[in-house]
Length: 127
Ligand code: SF4
Ligand code: SF4
Image: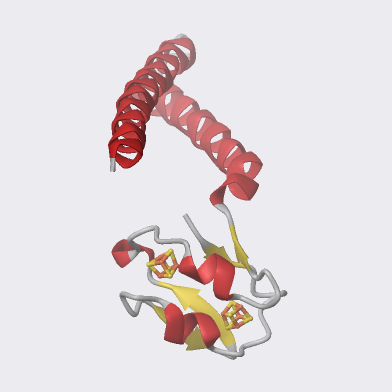
């Protein structure tokens, strides 16, 4: 998913004109993407002359940090609301289960996407 690095954006507006679904706008002389409507076409990445449109992978450490922070908050809340320190570990175990489930869903999705990619590649070769 694309995101704009505001420090790098020089406000030229090229990406605003190039986005095929019109979800990039300018705010305070920097581009902003309304992610809800993004079709992941990647045009904004190639259109930006200064590489200010960045890739999601760069935010991975930030997202991991946010997940860990959230889990700790849940653990604190479980202990406080349920009135027992042992609830911390129970909560942590539930979150481990949750992320294992997310991992399984991502792996199965990838398997399906890769087989779809193989099918499209072979159809292209036949043409
Ligand atoms: S990836 Fe495509 S649809 Fe999404 S913001 Fe960029 S140009 Fe628009
Ligand atoms: S093309 Fe790049 S520099 Fe220009 S407005 Fe979009 S993000 Fe900013």
